[in-house]
Image (cartoon, rainbow, N blue to C red; front, top):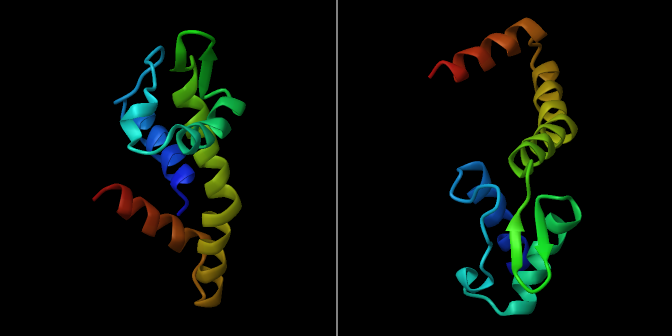
Length: 109
């Protein structure tokens, strides 16, 4: 994983775990990387509205950031993980009911 991608993932994880919440300043020094790399990692989050830049003040967690990240994660699951799971289930002859039961059991652990 590229260093800038680690910055992106670390910020997203911090928002999901609520270590960073709406209005919190995201300090570039907290990542232990040079400023250019850290800002490159923040760029996709600025573009998607997860972070907001306030000139002269810094970069902050935007209102609705948590919901946006969750939405991105759901879309990612729908594009990659669910089709992979369904494809593998079909290969071994499982039905949608079988898969749903397996998922239900996993949730109940």
